[in-house]
Amino acid sequence: MKPVKQRIVVGLSGGVDSAVTAHLLKQQGHEVVGIFMKNWEDDDDDEYCSTRQDFLDAASVADVLGIEIEHVNFAADYKDRVFAEFLTEYQAGRTPNPDVLCNAEIKFKAFLDHAMRLGAEKIATGHYARVRQNPHSGLFELLKGLDASKDQSYFLHRLNQAQLSKTLFPVGELQKTEVRRMASEMGLPNAKKKDSTGICFIGERPFREFLNRYIAKAAGPIRDANGRQLGEHQGLSFYTLGQRQGLGIGGVKEKGAPRGGGAHEPWFVARKDLTTNTLWVVQGHDHPWLLYQSLTADKASWVAGHPPQGLHGASLGAKTRYRQSDAECHLVSALDNPDNATFGLSFGQAQWAVTPGQSAVLYEGEVCLGGGLIASAEAWATA
Picture 1 (cartoon, rainbow, N blue to C red):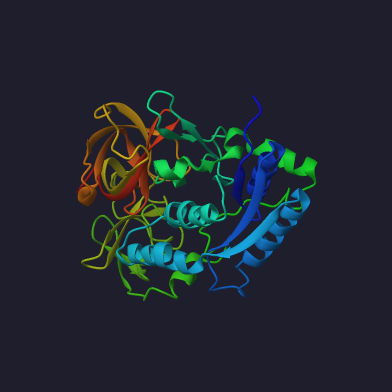
Picture 2 (cartoon, rainbow, N blue to C red; picture 1 turned 90 degrees about the vertical axis):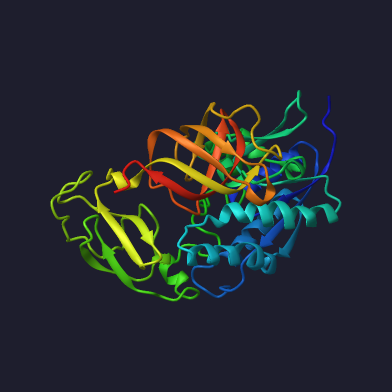
């Protein structure tokens, strides 16, 4: 059967993935309209800001494909819904992932609403993920992208049924190499453009340099597991658990060569104590203070609209950071009260540097069930 022609609004970012997304939909006979989202405008003249070039690339793609493109400014929404939360989390000593919030609040809320006002029936983006409607339950499911090395379902786990029902991820069915090949064959101007990395509003700039604009420094002691002061940190907000670089104590050796590391092994951030403004560090990647057996997450969001049914105690997979392999875990609790949307996970094998503020995302095979923000974690060693 010939597919029904639809009006689909594509988020054109200037990158190759969204360009091929638009091409695939146009090839299928749909009416395709491109929208370029401007989400940050404080650094338009900064050497690290690529917004202007990204729009030129997106406009060039639209010209080659023969589709309209609209430039839409969501910067005010982004500052209120994403950036304000980002700063609040860092000031509280946690390490947020703004891309997760951006997807939920901007790309699949503000952008989706705008597209619907333009008469769109669906929206599409260049994310490596898939959407499937379960033939038995009728619910929409979020699936991992087929290219495991590019899967972005982790960043999309907060999408709900209404959002997924209106969303397409065409490149989620492809390998990245195939996307590049298609872009080259079509003669797209951005076929060889490198993938963007890092947080969108920071770009390639030094992270601490950026945070310095918004968060005051509050220096304090850096201590090892024995309580010995090794140096001074620049403010707890500027460090994250598991961090190895930028500690300024590379030449110091751990007294007594404690468990998990030898005298010449690198130092890692293990804990942040806001009450004493102390940064605790340990030597060795496998130090017990960096290994966690369970976690509690809050602000839970479930793709189905409710916690997983019948899966308490079942063996599931979880990611506590992007690009990690699914870790076998058990869902030990999940509350559905909107005021207390929490869940707990226990792991069969120790998880490294589980970080408050990051997302814990739960999977049943290739299906992303949802997730929440890591509130706390229990280490194998608590001393």
